[in-house]
Amino acid sequence: LQWTPEVETRMKELNGRLEIAGPVLEIGHPVPDEWGTAGGGKLMVRTLLCGPETLVVTLINTNYQATAEGFSYEAIPDATVRVTLPPDTEIAHCFAAHTDTSVSFPFQVDGNELVIEAGRVETGGFLICTGDAELEASLRGRWDTLVAHRLAVRERRRAAFDQKLANVK
Image (tube, rainbow, N blue to C red; front, top):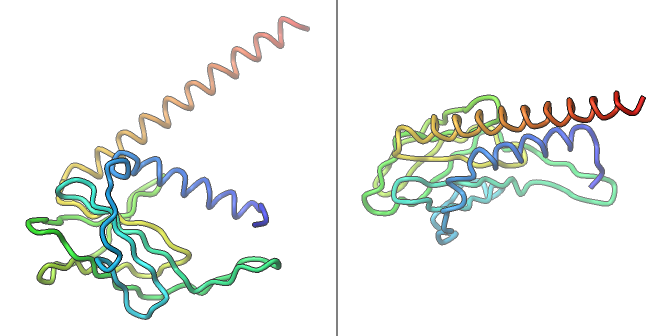
């Protein structure tokens, strides 16, 4: 893997998304692979059950080439994903939490399956599907507080360093 500004930007975004979803991911348990499917054969679906009313659905585009010369892929233009729901699980919202905002995804329940219109899938990603009406706001609030704290710590360290530097001169 060649480290480029694009790779760095994508890694920062993915790390932020994982940090936002951390409280959900840390209680997740994998379910059988056959619980998640997508048409076309180029999209791998894996699912975590995260408590009684939340699923994390991971989408992995397998239509790629990784060689010594580099990495390339073809996006999946219009993905529809089906996930088996445990009994009595009610989903009210499916979203992808990004560092700056969240994006909602349309879905419907068909019998015991959650059908998600995932749209265009580049290399992959994950969706949080939940019956908890407050989950998205709670995760976002935690993220905002965490970022504010980290920026404040960075600023205090910078000021302390600047003071030490001024004392040396």
